[in-house]
Length: 151
Length: 151
DNA sequence: TTAATTGCAAACGGTTTGCATGGGC
DNA sequence: GCCCATGCAAACCGTTTGCAATTAA
Image (cartoon, rainbow over all chains, first blue to last red; front, side, top):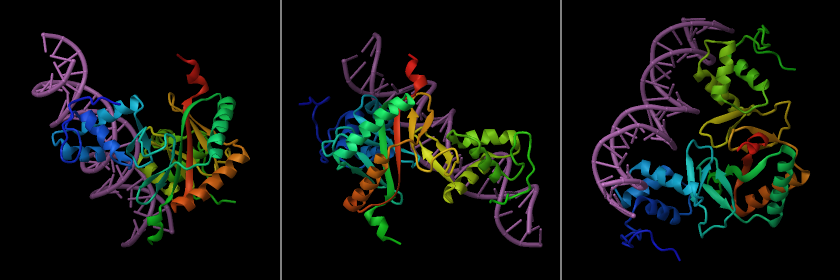
């Protein structure tokens, strides 16, 4: 059980009225989407209208550094953030990115086969290219269900 | 056989002295690296000192649109470009990115097994998430041979 | 009271746009 | 002469930094 960092005052939205860091964390906890810094900021404004965008960036960076948050770049020219251990998701996952509406779907139901192969591939690459692989990103790009039907 | 867009005047570096587009293309042809727009621009300046960065961007965008050039984002906050059919490379490849020196290695010698699995995975994903997959990026991040030894 | 956190404004870096100039059919 | 291509400067957008004010320990 995690002891709240600060007193547990809640507002009507169920957020703790607290310091910006917990606020940012709560916003990330409450979503399944891949939020940009500005997305987080806009949500944060509803709770703490005095909060600054800079603070959101600093909080996000902090969480990325300690590994609580993953920072992703889907080629939009801005970063998107996602809780590492979002209880709604499996720990390890890849992404489906819609090139039209920019929706990102987490793709977790890969076959064991895939996990095995990735391990094997990483091993082979490490050896062949003398590269110490620390992590990988797999992004599939295409049209989502919704955008495929249109035009 | 491709007819040159313009007369074939060559300078001492072997580049055609020609319009910016062919210049940009030639620069991409002559390298195995993943150049940023500025990288291309700096090289272009040696050939045509009057060229503008804007023109380089426009040429790159054009080539990306018609599929001659791939635009990649390795999370550095700037794009990198690579000829699609670089004769030095296989058509389809993935990337090893050094998180320290930012070197990008093309990784082409994947096992057939991997290609098979990617196809299978794409098919399964298309079905399950009703996503029409058009392409994918696989990036491995880690430390290259060189950076691994240091500190 | 001392250190850390915050918000603001300005700077920054990569990319894009507006616009007037210039070069090729 | 017409139109597209080009270069410049300025705008733009996401992000970072400097700094002074505020807050927490």
